[in-house]
Image 1: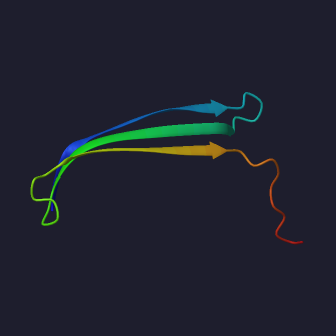
Image 2: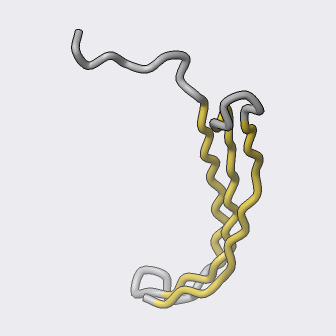
Length: 65
């Protein structure tokens, strides 16, 4: 397998001014690559996008209950 291409990340992060903790974050990755393998001998271009989102939990889980 041989692969060449590029990956680009962009997103946003919200930080609390009170406790300096992450309140929210999102990140998008955009990948364009050329993939050559036994299954893809013509090395097609692939455009892949994925999104990751983080939301702060409202309260911690108490493991002693």
